[in-house]
Amino acid sequence: MTLIHARGLVKRFEGFTAVDGIDVDVQRGEAFGFLGPNGAGKSSTMRMIGCVSPPTDGVLRILDMDPRRDGPAIRARLGVCPQLDNLDLELTVRENLTTYARFFGIPRKVARARADELLDFVQLTERADSKVEPLSGGMKRRLTIARALVNEPEIVLLDEPTTGLDPQARHLVWERLFRLKQQGVTLVLTTHYMDEAEQLCDRLVVMDGGRIVAEGSPRTLIEQYSTREVVELRFNAESQEVFAGKLTGVGRRLEVLPDRILLYVDDGDDAVAEVQRRALSPASVLVRRSSLEDVFLHLTGRTLVD
Amino acid sequence: MLTLVLPRLISFEGAGRRSASVVERNVTTLQPSYWLVMASGFLEPILYLFSIGVGVGALVGDLTLPDGRVIGYAAFVAPAMLASSAMSGALSETTFNFFGKMKFMKLYDGMLATPLRPIEIALGELAWAMMRGNIYAAAFLVVMVAMGLTTPGLAVGAFGAAVLVGFAFGGVGMALSTFMRSWQEFDLVASAQFALFLFSGTFVPAQAYPPVLRWVVEVTPLYRSVDLIRAVTTGEVGWLQALDVLYLLVLFALGLAVAGRRMGKLLCR
Image 1 (cartoon, each protein chain N blue to C red):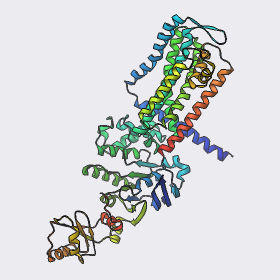
Image 2: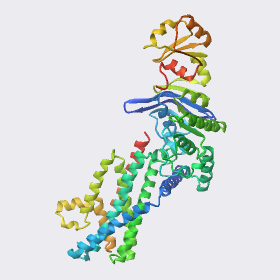
Image 3: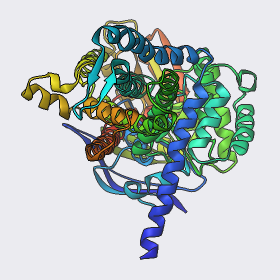
Image 4: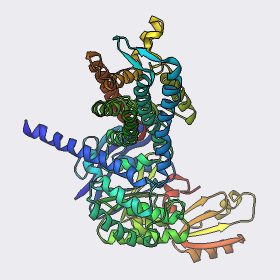
């Protein structure tokens, strides 16, 4: 069943187009991602799906309803974790959940029970009576995720769920989201971290400049737009450009970045041997597997995080 | 017909419930220290009443109302203090606090991701703002009755009038806040509020002003509020007061509608 259906979806603000005609279908139980750099139109898309931003043009149907008309009914069945935590700083951790539940019309008793369950789920039971302010970034984010689950939503929207978190906190969030996914909750998330997309998404679209430039599972995207392995070479020189010319013919494709050269190859070790045969001596050599970062670089000529 | 009307009625019922959940959120935030804020808000009109109503009143003596009745100065000033405290109570919640919640705490961004609609948030916040003002009004009326400035029966009527005054100013305050860009702009509201407080027939009957000025004074919202509450506490309600009520109801509805629309525009971009 299609939970989110968009055709030619457009969001324009005065003077610029944030989302420029995208087609998206999200099925029940799927973990769907919008991958792209800052300003690609991911958050604008999420706000339209969250029924807090009216589309400028195009078709958008969520849970088979029209966001322009049925906003409250749709939002009742969505869980939203925004990019910036907007927790209620005047309330305690637990009150943030119980009060939010009341906005959905959930009876007090049920709200209290659900809050306890969710605090346990996001591992914040010990901080239940603390105010929000002293919590760490990771804790706040987990509380925001718990808050998004308080109405037992059918779709959870997560806008850059781990941006700004340290690695340990990120892994904890991923692990919780993965458990949600296993429970069959439909997840829609935006990210500019390729590893996040690879970890969590069954299917994703790559966005750039308000448009969708590619679509597929992380694996098919990598197979389609990149090679199996990548060799990263760093040369001790003002410019990497000089060495690019000396590498022609090594691998299928080559990208020159300000600080390194990427060689797209089928076999990394063969390529490294060829580099050495040409008497080039890079300061460092790294052979790794292709990632979505490479897909993005290939599609747009730019890196995701700059 | 029924299928057309019924869902709307149900959704209206939902709207009331949702607005109430906004009030509930505010009740949850109450801290023990809030009672200090309450006490100061209550004390202010009482201080004015004693210093000006009783103190200055001793110099002024009795006043002759336009209808020929003669009342003590304190009985003249007290209803005006009640009206202006209902105004300032409503404005302080719906300007500063509302603006802070909207722009800085981002409170409503979180609420709008739930079934709540902007107008429901506005109504809930307004109802909350009124609760505080209403407690002030009730306490002040108790003092008035104790001082013999009105009767208990009339005080009940005056309470209703003060509630209406609060809602009207609360609506206006909210609507204004949605147009504000910075804290500094609230100084303008404070100045306007003070001017209203001084000249709305509060300390001097409007008849004391030159005709043109008097006309200006008589269309201001605080003047209409003072007129209404004074008519009730002195027991002289007429058709003019029906006009006051209508004026305040329109102000309230207009303020709430504008606030709801502007919130939608600002927050649901």
